[in-house]
Image 1 (cartoon, one colour):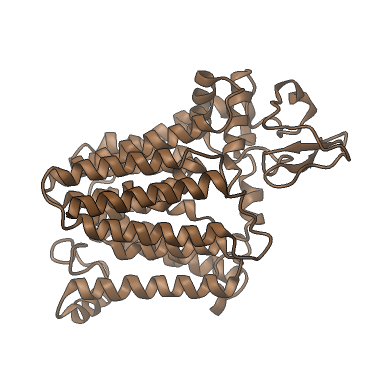
Image 2 (cartoon, rainbow, N blue to C red):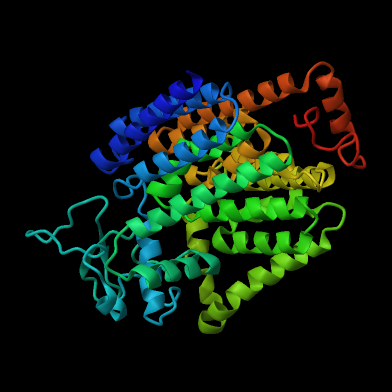
Amino acid sequence: MRTAVTAILLALSTATTVIAVATLPVYNDKTGQLEPLFYLTILLWVLFALAVLMLRRVEGRAVVVLVLAGSLGIGVAAMTGPPNTSTDSARYAWDGIVQNAGISPYRYVPTDPALEHLRQDWLFPASDADGSCPGRPIMESVEPGTDTVVCTAINRGTVPTIYPPASEIIFAAVRFVVGPEAQFWPLQLLGLLTSLATTVLLLKLLQRRALPLWWAALWGWSPLVATEGVTNSHIDIVAALLVVVATALVASGRRWRGGAALGAAIGAKLIPVIAAPALLGRRPLGVIAASVLVFALLYVPYVVSDGIGVLGYLPGYLSEEGYESGNRFILVSLIAPGFASTVIVAVLVMITAVLVWSKTDPANPALGQLVMIGVTLMVVSPRYPWYALLLVPMIAMTGRWEWFAVPLALTYRFLVPSLEIARLLLFVAIVVVVVVSIKRSGPGVLSRVKHELRHPLAPAGGSQFDNRTVT
């Protein structure tokens, strides 16, 4: 009966995903209205929670079968329509097309006339009869030098790409296999395969440590993975898999290989650099050297071709998003607006990194990863929920479901353009994490936390990150 109920809940999740992806229009966050996608997203998270709760009571091989079947079914459902909340995958496709033509993706902006011969109709559709573009997801842009209006599915068509080399290699490889005419499904398929690979890896890691196998469903069935990893095909999902690989390798003593996987993850999205502190341990040299070496090797061909141009739009993006001014840090800016927010956030992240480095057991770094990534997301408060894809596998590796409050808060910050609501939800997320973590720790936790605060750099041992000191 428990297995049947779980399967029914998964079927409902799959059907709801199809409705959200295949039948709804592209979400427009500029309207300030609660679109149907918002309500369907709530439903998806409720079904996810119910299915996981029911799975906890299932026993035997049925757990593995349900985890894998649910991951596959929900993932395939997420491919039934084009991207619906982001146009990033259009840039991914374009960068791959450009590279396969023998041109660096950092050299020209997408609307540059020099690349006109590479334009595909699905990325650069013709304008309407009145000369206008149809609207989101097709946006108006201009050709540099000519000011000719161009309709394109690529966001920020007048700036160079922002993505680092490992991502660019993946984009080129995908387009090399499928060609330029294939639209969004190849990258969605990549997201699905990456999601399934991560699910299988999590099952193996959990089995090796004799931990509950149902924890893998926290990744495989997650609405965030389905919508942002598959439907919208964010490359963060590949970075998340590489971080899991790095964590598993370091935990098994293969530090150089783990460092290499970490370097590849950073080369895919840069953000996974926050996964480093939990992997360093008392012998950090191997991890650091391998990650730096792999990261540098990935950049070499592009640096030779474009020099400083490999930075792409990264400096402009940081300024545009308000990270330089501190305006994006929605909680910290309440007490220290402007540039002071940037300073405070940097200090908070640095303190967290030092604590995670000093307290994490190198043989079991998952909990340290959870704390480092989760706290960073809390204080940085990014506007894009797909950044939290890096956190979800760590939730699955530790079973700390309460940390889902963080990606949930970021998701609704994205879907509901209200600063006040975003601040409230992020504050609630912090409260949920703290309260549940204290409850997990049992009696006497407050005295242990006080000891940790008084002696933050105490030698590893009883003060390592474990079930008692996670708070």
